[in-house]
Image (tube, rainbow, N blue to C red; front, side, top):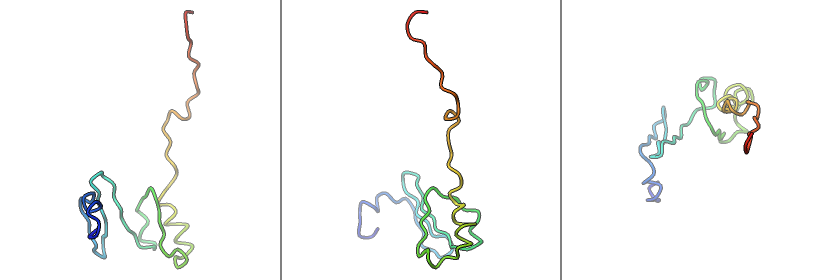
Length: 90
């Protein structure tokens, strides 16, 4: 960020603390970090990046980290049947 004025303009607030590191962008996006252990259970994400995944316990990865993303959300109209539209005079 210090070497990129364009990136600096997009960042609203950030913290590099060990207990709660984050980046808040002006457009409302957020980057948060979590430690790969059981205590990270309550977090959620849209994208999950696991740094040095080969060192992360497989059980924690499957039961905690992969659940961050949860099931894909779909709007309700996706499951509604398609209705034919009538065109012209009837």
